[in-house]
Image (tube, rainbow, N blue to C red; front, side):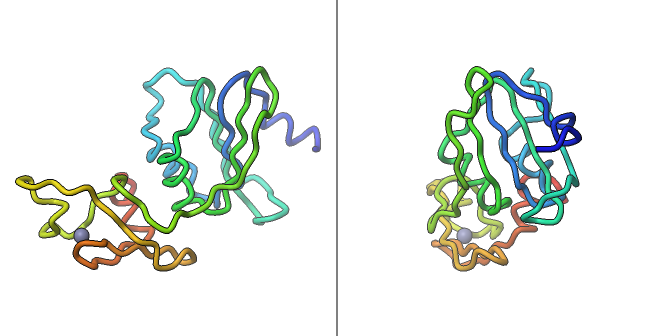
Length: 159
Ligand SMILES: [Zn+2]
């Protein structure tokens, strides 16, 4: 690790470091974790840094926060190359790559307003199957509507 890199990535005590995020997706990752900056977590956002694997990458560090399985699945959808480091007492206690699951349940809304999952009378938990990982394509299990990365960005208010 070069000293230049250590300057950018200072250590956190307890929390999570999401590394190897595709360039330009760090804000989307924060958004889908529901982090706006007003929650009081210390957050570091590093964008467009050099990466041997990806050319350039983004990094998100959140102090005092861990990720649920659902949140990891969402991160995987928009940042399939991401590596997650769990930090406790300044040490990396766990490090793993995210993986896009085959089915995404209850995390995203179908964009088809007539879909049964969007009816107020009988709310049905949304369910999407992953058709393709690169490029990302999800299909609603109820109405067959295809969703791509830009639909997810729109859902989280980024377009
Ligand atoms: Zn649908």
